[in-house]
Image 1: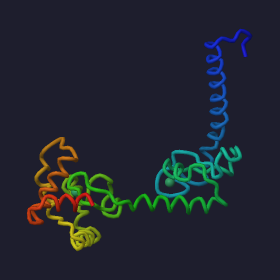
Image 2 (image 1 turned 90 degrees about the horizontal axis):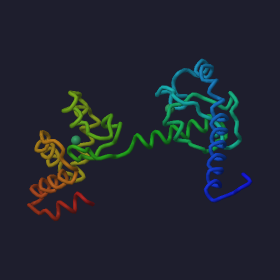
Image 3 (image 1 turned 135 degrees about the vertical axis):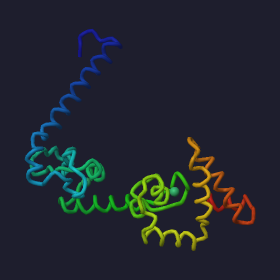
Image 4 (image 1 turned 90 degrees about the vertical axis):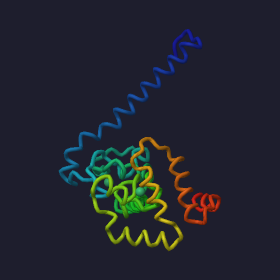
Length: 212
Ligand SMILES: [Zn+2]
Ligand SMILES: [Zn+2]
């Protein structure tokens, strides 16, 4: 501590100490980066865990904060997502960690989402490669044929069997396709109108269906 301690220079001193600690941490944490080329030589340029995405980071199999192990044997090349999924959890071995990460990835990829264009619910990656628009809207936008797949047709018939009037969603898409900058609220209101039209012009019933 400086000899003459005032309120102001105390906080400056603390800030300086803090910066020193951060610098130390950064230096310590970065020392393992020298292994990058060697790791890629051994494990390949793809992520060690998912084998799908290109590796862009180095993962500590046993998290660094656990025992500060920056040794080569504790490192694998990993994609950003896999690296984050296990965060600082500790596993028996690297295979157990890999299984955990793959399960988490699978859970994520089976998320049900709502199309932002026509509001049809669908399963991300199973039905369509994006989280934002469904197979039908995707096909319109990009000229693909996801909506002709059996998996999509089966899904649509399941939704219909569950009482979801798919035609109403398609009408919403048709009506709003050419109009730019429509808020999701307007889309939902348009969908309520379409539902109401199908269900005996009862907007309250339509509203209840959509919000339940
Ligand atoms: Zn990965
Ligand atoms: Zn859609």
